[in-house]
Length: 299
Image (cartoon, rainbow, N blue to C red; front, side, top):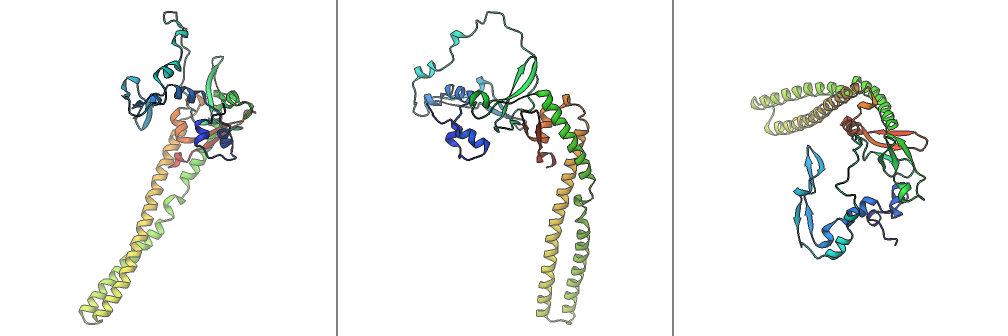
């Protein structure tokens, strides 16, 4: 029916890969499912579907949701809403023996891995007892991407190799004497200059009291040297702030290096490693994997 998808409706259309995908109006399966289950069209609001645990937003159990009925005018009937829900009668009988669940491991690259050809995210699935990532565009809009697929182990290895290279760069950066050291000579000079100007200011007062200079000269000279001291103190505060920032940066780099020193095998990679060090992963059809290191690892 050519109805624009939510992303196409909201997006500013352009020429990038992501924008071309939005412009195509492709509907995601999860988007349709979410709309069909959303009771807001019945005039109800449901709040509290997510909660923050340890600074991470997570889904809350359904029995903890807050339901507010008839908060606004409905745009569909309850009968139509119910008719759009999944047909429970076609689901397998609960009394039938269930297949044993396959072993599961965390999806550590979720939200970070993309197809290098269409720019869309790659979903994780299992094939022959092995996890793979595949481009979702091929299934939804074949004219936008020819498809892309890669094994999770290959992604793990590529990320590990990139992190090991980054570890070498960190070791060099930490040992660089320029981190904070370049401001120390200027700070010492300012301290000596402040001491010198303060001594001159005290001498001015004594000269005024002893009649060596008159009041007008004292006020004029004192104002000049006071401005000089204010400028020196302001510059000193800037340098100290820069030095503290450099110390914080060095401590962060040392912690990142400590974490990477413990990472010796691709199987050891966790979601925490990806969240700290990886900003984006792009996969090519020929198996190449581009890993962009995140600035978060040095902030």
